[in-house]
Image (tube, protein in one colour):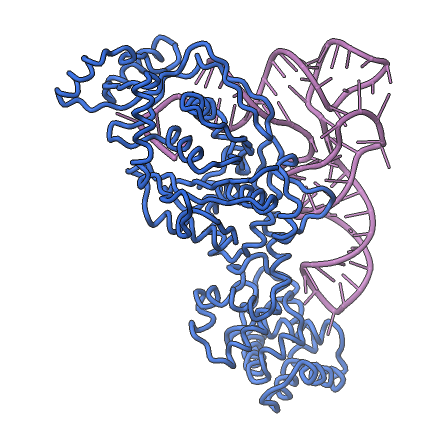
Length: 492
RNA sequence: GGCCCCUUGGUCAAGCGGUCAAGACACCGGCCUUUCAAGCCGGUAACACGGGUUCGAUUCCCGUAGGGGUCACCA
């Protein structure tokens, strides 16, 4: 393969979508795999919907995912500028050329006229398409209209009776009849080119060799091909990857839950997990492995193994994959990832002391195996916070554990013993509890489960010794006392 | 509606004429564990349908059905 040049060209009309992220990823993997060039530019020709803040968000999301680029916004390059709105002067000569050669023409139809035409056609049961009203306007008529103050859009004159063939790297040969395509607008009446036109000019100017994008663009491709043909440009290779679907099999959108990369980041997903997951959505490596580092993905990626059929976004699998990466994270990083969520839940102060931070790190570490994404942390470490014990009414095993004949004695005695310490480690805590058991002749469930429930109100939770150690003897004593009073209230 | 794409378990997905049709997530069961989870072991579960082609179709071709995309002065 010769020099590879690919691009990711989102429109800044919203945050980076999960589908866009996958397109970016596939382009990036392909570029890196072949030692090619990755370009990032913006399709900001929609003045109404484009916003600078979205551009910043998209770029930030790409960086967070680890998808860097060699040319484009922020890094510059030989084909700058990389925002379509800043490239208007570059487009001008091509527009003039098409107009002069009669391959495009001015259209003075108003929005209302066009709408009326569409209505009429569909009322008669015919397909809505441009009727070609301005197709054969004379130059003189055009000048007259313009002099009268009418603003014109530019339409591409679609040649009749042509077969337009897309040789798609993932879909194979796809044929379209030019007769099925109405003359389409390439420059809006405000002088700004439309997407279908500008994208061709940019890709040609920037020598893009491979266009890897979502399948929704497949139907647009013949229009673009016609423009390549009209301007005599070299046609790049196309690869249309299938769509990402929601659980209900319709195109992934907001109502399917978290749909932007930023949302996953906020929830505490790791970029390497998202990248790994997205890579496996619509592409599959050889072999049976599922977990791949970015470097491994780069080594293995190929368009030949990209699937044609759409894929449902499987939240469960993403969660599983994220939990896998979470388990590999050093304790300090895991803690840092979780801290904002603990602070938000009001469990930990926003700027904890070093000692407190060290303690939080240990607490968070106990939840590591249970954690699917960082935002879940408050619910998982609740037991480590607070003075009081509330018996979970749903938890029948818990109530049972406090109803052993020996329960009050176990709790009272362990409390006394705990009071003798200012601090203790897991070892000491365990020994102390065992001594209580020996003293009172209690072991097994009536000993351990009773203490667990007396401490947390629940029959399930973190390892008891860990819990004791992290709670510390003084808090343990206070909680036990609290439960003791609770029990007296029940019996007395 | 026209055009285009797609169709293997609930989901992702391997397969590229001959397989007992991989693997992963989820689910169920067991082991481990003084709880839970993790981990390990095992289990349930699929080629949309109908015609061809072929000695032989999940695999190739044609229909049907279903799903999706697109037909904007949006991208």
